Length: 292
Image 1 (cartoon, rainbow, N blue to C red):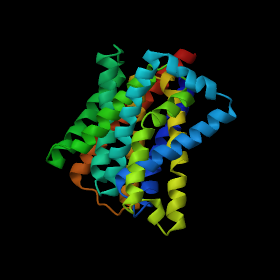
Image 2 (cartoon, one colour):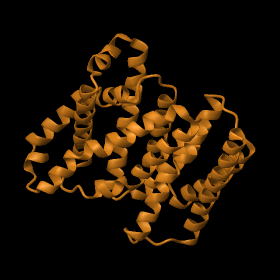
Image 3 (tube, rainbow, N blue to C red):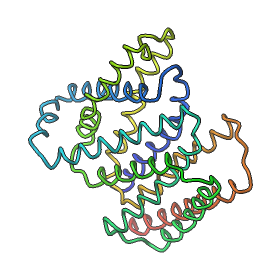
Image 4 (tube, one colour):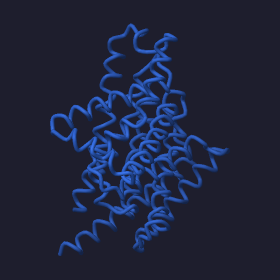
């Protein structure tokens, strides 16, 4: 079970790591409009899958369960905040804060695991957290001010992970409600934007329209994998797997974005990578002990 969880979550974070390239290709739309179209396209895709699977009745049947719907409203708001902040960061040149936010997320998730879920950490996990915390601390100190976007990204996704970890709702049904709950709000935003000439109807590029159309696939597929894999892993494991996405973004920034790497950057990322290696090796040894 845990091995499958690592595969699902690993694929999720690899896809999320390359996602900034996709959003950077969309030009001519404000971040809020991109976010709104993303919600709509994701919901259309999920509902099509639910219809194909004949789960539509089960989907609407969740409305009868108040506690489940309360949890779904919470996860919907958290992931919506995270999506908007991420798109805003990428499209407004704040990729540094985006990367920082997703590097901070694992520590928040691990703290949630310790203090809320009462998860106990192995010695190698404690060592990994110390190395990662040092690296992230240097990163924040170097930034020189409170990174509000990064904090928003970290807190929103970490608590979203907590909700998904403790959720008993099928991942596809959950994703449908997470996008459907905010649908009235985003439809109003789209209507207002189209009237003002800031929407898809004003765009002349077919490639841009296609990018928006496929944004649902780019959004839903990783979340489906995440929703399936999250219940199989501890918050600590989920947290450290999170380092995969910002590390990919880091290498993209150097190779594609042409950003330079300073001494402080090397020390900061070095601490995080050492923590990730310690965690990965320790986890593999632990899994082998359980297996044999």
